[in-house]
Length: 155
Length: 251
Image (cartoon, rainbow over all chains, first blue to last red; front, side):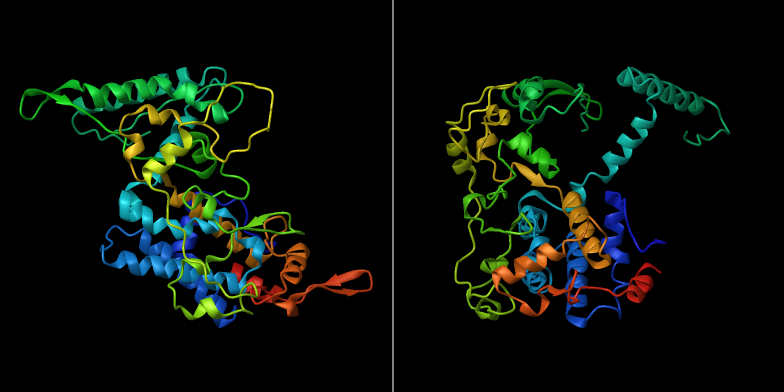
């Protein structure tokens, strides 16, 4: 932040930034049209990550995504449009066919994988050290069930 | 149900991941064809459990490995396939997938604007996504050999292999086999927006080459680079922030 850079963001940081935070700093510093596009993009991501989306709204959302992309084309340079930006068009189709986004995303699993990675003590045998610590932890939690007045703090 | 699998090795399996997945496919076939006997604790009876692989979710490079579609190059989008419109940038040396106006409705006013977009009207209609059986017809003839082979690029095909998932009897009937990971898309879009806004070196999509491309395409000529002696001056675009604006952004 000190040298006016925002680097090394993880995917969940980007998620929060996109959903809530990015709307705030661009207020008042960008021209109105550019600000509106970015705000609409943020709101679009916000809507498709909601827990409830009415099926009648999906058509509206699909059009919204296309219009946002067209407006981005007006303001941003052509090299901005790599394949990832193109994929926004197809997101709503997948919601229609596969169900809501929050049922399919991987934040939970990635977090779990992070914990499992931390279990690795011997890098030559990663699987074995994960198993060893996992079993120990399960055993300890199981034992604490037998002790009254003790609550697991979760190691 | 969560199933974890670890493929160990010094480097990623890449296109050969099918070999490592074959035990999984074997189990999934068993679950679909015959089913397994499972005990229900609530009703205290045994029943036959069958399961179906609904869709798989992965990030975009892995999408290419698992589905056998090459997600690089000009036809990178596996949903539009050959109908995607791309534009090779001469100076930026990238492919840009613009022209999203074709997805708009027929009579949308944006279709008729010239100057704001790439200098021409857009009258093409949106590409229809591939139907399930079409994909199967395309991949069923592709032959592959896994492992290290001598590269012979005699036939260039955007489908690199027939994915091992097609051994499941229902796989060719499904409409969406692979989901696009919203998480991954969101991250990349966010990265490029922030990189472009804050003009972070190496992350920004704007620069002298991008401006040269704009000149080449013949749009937004007010942004073209102007040589001033030894230096080149890039006029500020509408998304450029000045230093004081950047400071207020970061605060």
